[in-house]
Length: 447
Ligand code: ADP
Ligand code: ASP
Ligand code: MG
Image (cartoon, rainbow, N blue to C red):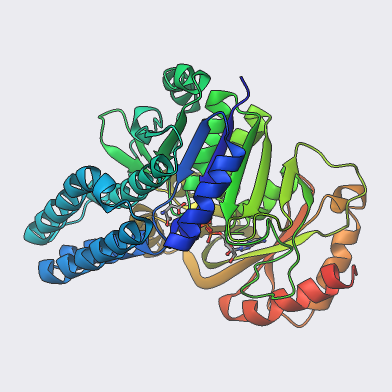
């Protein structure tokens, strides 16, 4: 049995038109069944987070107003698709639950990460039920399977770590259904921890849900359907000239996403490596347009630099020179446990630099504690990474890549462990100018 997993991101299910396109892609790609992973309708996760924040300040009315807007948005989409009656039974308890959660938070003026995850999961559940109703209306044998049946994680609410071994075992129950030709629709982004409560994998985590399912089910291909024509040479919002990359190596994709390219969640490539399946990134709005195929390795003719990634909002922790590095490693490990994403760790005799993005309130707390203990903490940093398999062939050329930056305030220069990236830190505000300039120099003109 060859299994395909298709994942549709927020904008791919964000309007009736997009949902119709997604349904037609599913019909074409999964004629004999498969797995469909969906995100919440675009903007819904942000709205739920806003509602939770208001409830946490005691503003229950404000939170419920946002819930009203979420409800209207979803019902309008269902109406336009002619599936209002079909979704009602599944949706009513979800809206009720979100209301109760917000009221509870509003009453207590408290929003624990666990409660927040319970609220967030409703966005993906609403969307998954809508997609099931639409597919059934179009005659497909679609059924909802709750991701929490299989997506086992630890209990770090808000940025939970998946447990691939447990996910694989749990997925055995889904295989017979797939063998019968079922189209299983499930929520991205969410999972369940040992006490049974809902967890989330971190913002953008639906990509990781899809690749984890691909790994656990032994899929031959996972397709990430999004709003751009594949993985591009840079973020198109900063570089309108960015072009799709037709084929890229898994190492490149992993580096690009780890250094912040939002198109693939940073944790989504490890399951691809373990599972050995093909990963495809394509545009729901232009299914016939170019797409990116990510393969274990490419043919060795790769350009020096194939893409540029960046991430803002980083914090640099500066450690003084020390005989041993215990304090540095302890901070790195505490921050990782607290949910921070690590962008670089540089240890030299003149001192050490740890660059992280907090991502989770617990990590903010660890940073505040380190600062209070006298550590120099630098905020407002961004990382920039130049990525390309070609750097493995000619590692020395990494030096030349830094030459155009001589007037920049560059810090923490790192040449990545896999030998296919050069990354450095700059002040956040330099990104708008720097990323297009680097793209022009190294990609558009193949400098
Ligand atoms: P989805 O909701 O489908 O998961 P995301 O917004 O998470 O979509 O990711 C797609 C977005 O990622 C694109 O619209 C684009 O703005 C951004 N992006 C950043 N870097 C890249 C890149 N190198 N290639 C493609 N898209 C990128
Ligand atoms: N809905 C979640 C988010 O907005 C997960 C995802 O889209 O991948 O972060
Ligand atoms: Mg995404």
